[in-house]
Image 1 (cartoon, rainbow, N blue to C red):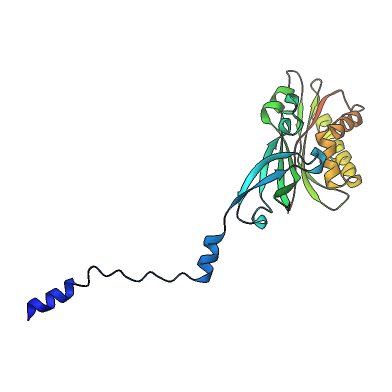
Image 2: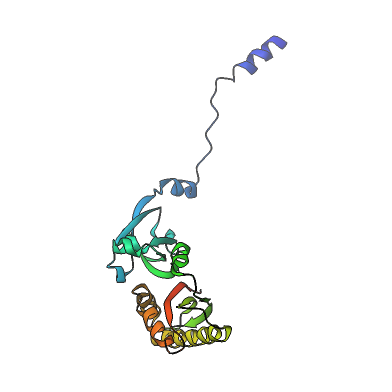
Length: 210
């Protein structure tokens, strides 16, 4: 009797267990396939293709940020001292369209601009552009020779006032264009020459505050 029960138990070993049912949600997830999308630079760089990204849906890319060296956007070795931060704002067909949200002068470039017998003035403040965008601005000004602390303070005050007024005249996009083309830096330098001889005016960093 015990032997018969043992045979019955062993006979069930070869029977396959039923597979678990796949829900509609799981099936939909499995069907989604990721593909490559081109990354397009802002229109001020002629909508140049600057790379690719991998995503399942176009909406996944909106908000993604990336850093690009200015040399790669202009194909100019002399522009390698600047990095731009771009952000995906929309997707057209299979292309992710970006806008500029940050500008950064490389530290190696900043160090080379400082020479012996000069003074360097750094600052950081918030300025608002014509279209209401607020940005963190970090100028760097280098004098041609040593100056007093009073002159350094005067330069800092005048540069902040000048840049704040200039930002009010330009949209956020125009601000970035002016800085990338070094137009704003040259205008700032000219405005400060009455205070003391200025060697260089740079924007160390500019970042949109969200």
